Amino acid sequence: MSRSTIIKRSFSAALPQTLPILTGFLFLGFSYGFYMRSLGFSFLYPMLMALTIFGGSLEFVAVSMLLGSFAPLQTFLMALMIQARHLFYGISMLEKYKNTGWKKIYLIFGMCDESFSINYSASIPQDADRGWFMFFVTLLNQFYWVAGATLGGIFGSIISINTEGLEFVMTALFVVIFLEQWLKEKRHITALIGLIASVFCLLGFGADSFLLPTMICILAGLTLFKKPIEKAGGLQ
Image (cartoon, rainbow, N blue to C red; front, side):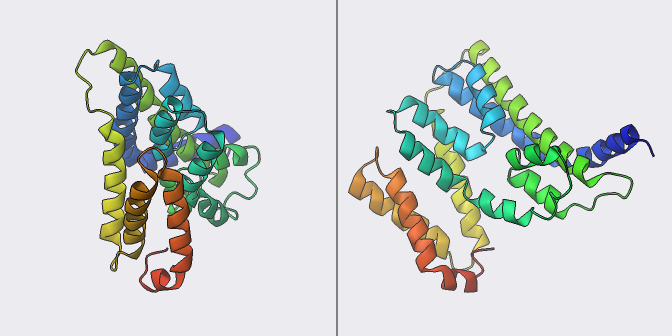
């Protein structure tokens, strides 16, 4: 079987796996691009941030960082805390990324929650190449996100509507994440740690400075209650 045929079959195997992601990424990406445009950014900003950051919730948080004061250390720590789960994703994928050649660099860069889920658990057809399959899954998922963010930024400059309150989309995103975590847990330990830490730091540090202390408190709480959380099935 020729190399080009293997690549085509790998793409054909990867495409159906990513189609369920298409709708969600286009919608969320569009909301993100539209949100940035409503704050005065050119469509190039969401497009380039989607290309280089490619980190959903982090990109929404990055908007407020761009509008805030210059704080590189806080920005670095915030990004690290939000995306820290990728450290564990990476460890899980060490074996699967072996012998993928130059594609390994992009696979590491482009790994998101959805790409990790597909590449980790998908049954790859025998006539497809594992490396190319994972590459196309990652590439297609990023393409969906970049396309959605770019379209949102473009239409945000064309469509003239009242965007007052659109910034609430970021709050809504994290509320959904919190509710999803709440529904997954039986004893709600991690969700309560996050909620209590957020309220405590908001009252203690104020709305402009509570995020970083909150992240530190959550990390400390998860470390302190690691064993009961694992018993309750809260850390997988």
